[in-house]
Length: 225
Image 1 (cartoon, rainbow, N blue to C red):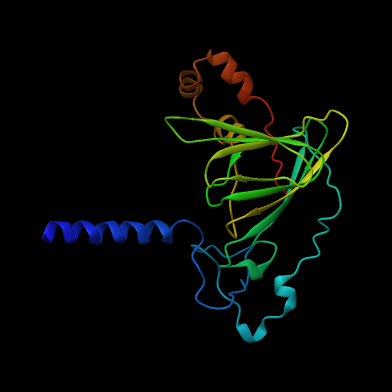
Image 2 (cartoon, rainbow, N blue to C red):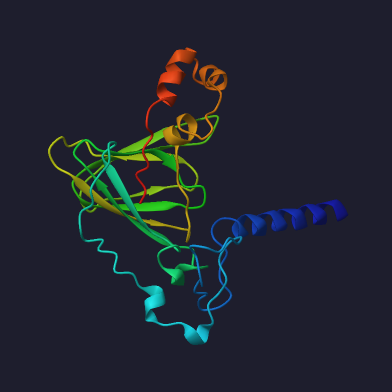
């Protein structure tokens, strides 16, 4: 009987712990406007501004998200609005991004280590997908049209691609973290500083070392601005 009770307690603790780490911590007050997000280095948030000094501008940014953005050589531009741009987002567990896609442009395979993403197509068509974790590595994909919505679960590798060779596309994404982070797979693996040993990568990808050397010599451009 005692062992059964202990098991129930442990199971309940595990469930509570999982809920606690599923997203950004919930605030215990109305807000906690960050004082200097560009300079402070703290864990899970920034120092709070005195609530008596908070005003509407702490929750506002003239971001011009209705304006198209220039895209880079992979054909995309991600304009992220997170706690670094709006101090009022501190502790609130949400951020936003506008993503512009050139014809045949893509937001290449990447992951958000701290956020689930929900994406809405505003203009054009997108081919999107994500891959589940090991060992299945199941690939789930969909073609989205204007007005369609798709969800990318937290931490999973995903992408968006504009299959139209003539027209651009635009999407808006909401993310379940004030600072979701982004790891673009090609940039991280092939463009790390200093570089990962070509012995390691050649073995991992089962290719010749000169193939890895050529890939590492490329310029791996960031598309997050």
